[in-house]
Image (cartoon, rainbow, N blue to C red):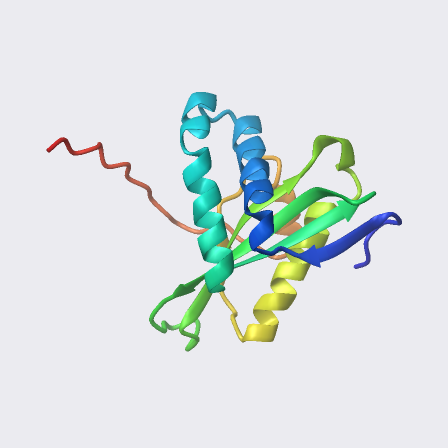
Length: 160
């Protein structure tokens, strides 16, 4: 799939860490997350993205229009033991898929996910997981993602 006219896809680099974190904050804000909590972790998120981009543990994809980044997505590379589905020791977690509201409707999220899947294929990674918002779920399902059983536990902070 090609991008609509006026859009270009490029890899993310370490200097994009703050921008990626800003998109992540916007994504979670739209999904109803606590704004104060997001503000509290902003700088830690920028540092995390900077470190993960520098180490190669995170691969980012950005779409620009008019010289401005308007959409992004990323892959977190994880070591896992082989299982019945794959002998690959690396799995990908797709995250930070975000399109600025004024640029929605141009299939940018789909193009970002396709670029991420192309990168997985190039690396021989054949299991990709993600957590989908209600808005994003149809895009992922059209690309072949299927729901899986997963549980989550938030462990309360331990006081010393």
